[in-house]
Length: 450
Image 1 (cartoon, one colour):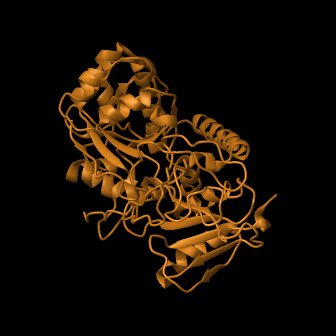
Image 2: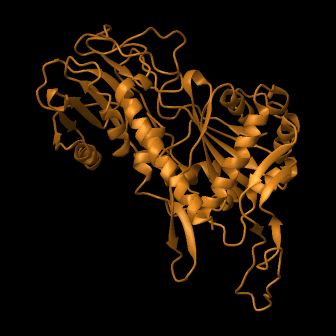
Image 3: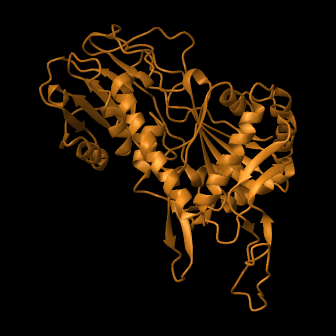
């Protein structure tokens, strides 16, 4: 198993013994360990590591989209009751103001842990990339499968490429550098689960039963002059995996994850991967993964460690929003991350995302200028959806701010500030002075109270 873990490029580490804190009035409930954590320091000292250059059935998709919509509504309702701020674990205040209920209290926010796990096939190819967002208390979490056939847009002079091709070009580092810009957030760690280790996990969990919805046909090149249709079980071509229940061993699972059937879309492949991974995770519940996970590495952060923490709690599966577009100059279609749906997806999935490269996300200071401790709760996801991330959270110099405002000091931050302000229905204002560690400041006033 190979592993890279540059730490948290966008924020500080987790303190050893965090004391509770809150905002004016009733302190918010303690946040979960997976969510952002704040410290006693006004300056974030944050820096983002630069990136190196480098057909499902319509009915099934409709059901998935409908289910996602219902889930989103439920999540919004839950946030309204509990308060989004509860996901921002408070551990301390500024160097001069230590009372979390006092004006001027400001604290740092630790980024949400987001791990990238590259699952290899037996031949060392990328079978699937897993985005793992840590869950409550560092246990459990959300798994987002990324098929190897997903096309990653051009970035920093590099041409569009698939996730599988990016991995083939430079392994986990190359995949990380191309996937982060495509999905609009970075990863706090990246690691690789080899095909051999995947096989060991399957063996540990016992026979893996997977329900395969559609016949998966061997891909063909119809543009090849020598192409001739080969009738299969359904009269359309050679079937690699038949619909129905499949029993897969380790090698078969890695191939099943990697395989893209003739005419199969990225959405369908992601759904298959989700079903197969769900079966694997259920089979591994309660199992000791240490023997498999650490077989080739003694490092603290590894794919095995990520999976161990994941399986120690509730596991939720989610789908990366994608859209189809026409390949330039052809009649073929390709699937890419959906830039229209990504903002909402990230804001509900990752409370405090980091940037994949410098300047990708505006570092934002969020201040409460009211006596309502929950006033900033609905603002945090709006900032994330607008392309920012909260790195400082606390109280304004007064709890009697009548009108909310968005401010920036550096002209280079104006576009980011304007995007956040537009999302909040406000107008960004340039102010004098230095604001080390942040690009934008958002102050919540009484006008945003219900």
